[in-house]
Image 1 (cartoon, one colour):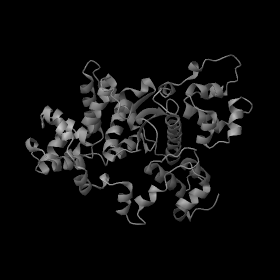
Image 2: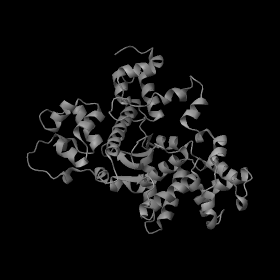
Image 3: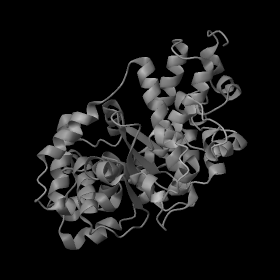
Image 4: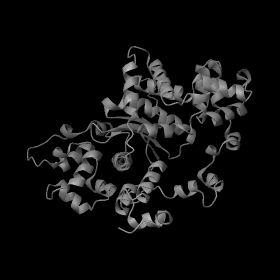
Length: 409
């Protein structure tokens, strides 16, 4: 049955084996039903593919139509806009979601706050209201429930931590040659699943990713539970769809409510009637949100006339922005601002998985959590390497100094 399921997902068996770090010959035998799948791997396959273990284990000989066993998310991932890199990256993200659940169970730090919050927002939603208004109301509820509305300041530096504390899996990693800019879906087996939001960092900016991630949170609340997944593509023009309008309004209101723009303008002496390129650079730096979204929010907030939105979007701010915030620097430039032994610099080279055939960057809080669990002897070195998707040699070379006091397995 595994072979049928793989065909349904559009995943190649050899590619799947490489991504999960499984011997391809053994994996082929599993797929062909020639060898029993060990329980641990059966549960892993169930989580990453989204199929019940009993179905994967089934050895029924009758002919099956692949559609019968295609989880909702994989329907979305078979579109013509997608490439193998997209499907393979989603598989890895789902694997990471499983591992995140494991480390939280081991450390007793299971976060499920998102469930009550998301359900409260859904129940309060007026489905008859315009989609933009639905999005704005949901964003205000999110800000108020997570203390993100305090001080009327930008939340670009802090909202990821707030989402992770709720139990949302937030992942940012480059996928070259992919048109996916962001996506959201649920990972893990029901009823222990969790929402995951992803932003493609390839040729993207910090300011744009903040919008993408919050846009995907809007989808995770309203759309992904029923549709299996929500996918957003680079330069997509599907802004007329109800779901997209709602998610776009959600992101803008969550990151740039009117009171935030008003507070920043007052604090920096910005005159909306004579907005300059330097003013726009300050607004982007303080809110940590891309320029075009700031310009749109300024119009929606009544600060700037609609006829001046395009001009506001086209101000040249790059040089001034680089003076105002390190977030505008390139990776190489940013590294120069860090000390040679700084934790941030070290972590840049410690969170890329090497076991999967396609690399993925693990979230820094997740890496810290795994290393901390190993230091506290809650997991073994072998388990730590598995959770970090690296081998034990890489584990020692990356974290050797931190793990010297731990006895060998």
